Amino acid sequence: MNEKSKIGVLILAAGSSSRLGHPKQLVEFKAKSLLQHAIDAVKDLPLQTKVLVLGARSTMIQEEVETTGFKIVLNPKWEEGMASSIRIGLGESLKMNPDLEHLVILVSDQPFITSREIEELLKAHLKNEKEATFSEYASTVGVPAVFSAKLFSELEKLKGDQGAKKLISALNLDLQSIPIQKGNFDVDTPEDVKLLKQME
Image (tube, rainbow, N blue to C red; front, side, top):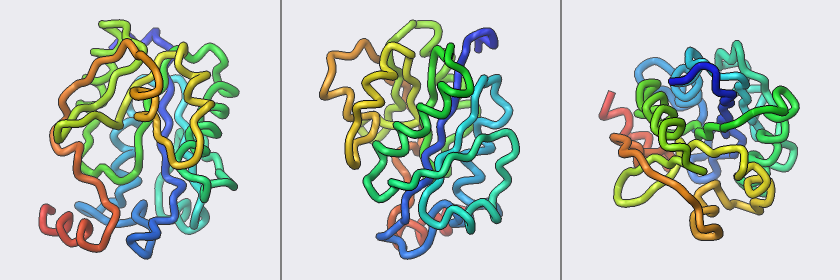
């Protein structure tokens, strides 16, 4: 990966986990919380900015997770949905580095995403000079994903519970996707947690 590129990372972890009943950010897998897995997957990559967006139960989460190296941003409008976290996280990233060229967006409940996979995603994005590079799994695309600066203004327009994937249908993007193993597994319900524990 080109260490001269100005790349930031944004981890979205502001939701209330209403379907689960307790913070999925703190669900443990292999002796680490799901959010810690996401942080650890990117903490050693050569990134210019590292932003973590929290919202519901932010105090509890900060007490349980090691966030050294990350700027924590609290989203007071987290109940509006994912788009508000993307907007506030992108805004903070650009405050930290107005010349940011690319932004990686992750969520906190994909325990099988690895540092190597994110690095491969970034390498492909930089090599092919696409507007966006998505992860591909289970016949669809999603996060982790990388966005070039030319799409930042579009990310700022997202509303409600729209994620960055919304841009695919809204715009004629010059994009690519990279296969990611087990990227389709995320945690939303008690059944998901039970299945996750069985895979430890």
